[in-house]
Amino acid sequence: AQSVAQPEDQVNVAEGNPLTVKCTYSVSGNPYLFWYVQYPNRGLQFLLKYITGDNLVKGSYGFEAEFNKSQTSFHLKKPSALVSDSALYFCAVRDLSGTYKYIFGTGTRLKVLA
Amino acid sequence: DTEVTQTPKHLVMGMTNKKSLKCEQHMGHRAMYWYKQKAKKPPELMFVYSYEKLSINESVPSRFSPECPNSSLLNLHLHALQPEDSALYLCASSPRGGREDDGYTFGSGTRLTVV
Image (cartoon, rainbow over all chains, first blue to last red; front, top):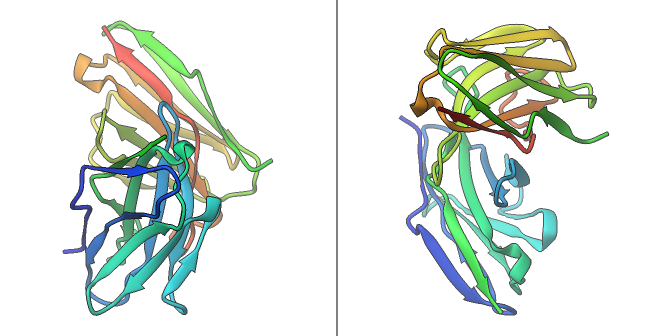
């Protein structure tokens, strides 16, 4: 069965510091991996995806993610955090068994401190 | 237009009421989705419409009834809900149905409270 794990419920980082939000996955075959961000009382916003190609994927708002096949990880990163980055972040993998629906992680709350 | 618009933003309804949630997109997307999200949890898929046909129903109770009148509109009809159905209901769309590499565009959701 395919699954996604986000091991940290919350990540705190000081403004200006680099941030990492962790995600590991378990799939059979090639993974289709996504990151979404959710601000309070809002829907999810697509940040970036890895389908194939370069392991470093660049996305919206200065975020990037590194795909590591050997560690089955897809960590979200940003070189310099902003207070406005504070939000709930979801990692997701696509179910390739036929439905193509998302399998979401449990979410990580990022808090950037001024 | 790059948005998914959901109305109303907030809805309070009694357990005997009938109400509808609406979702609209004008991006030419051919797949539309309903998700339910409880506080501090990931979204849970409810229904998928692909090319205006219902393609996935995730064993959702019949008190939730989806409708896709055309390629731009998606409704969710609600009847005889329970308090545990209170949640944020999210609509989303994607360019093509059944494609594993498409990202979704989500609406801001309808915050539903059942009293």
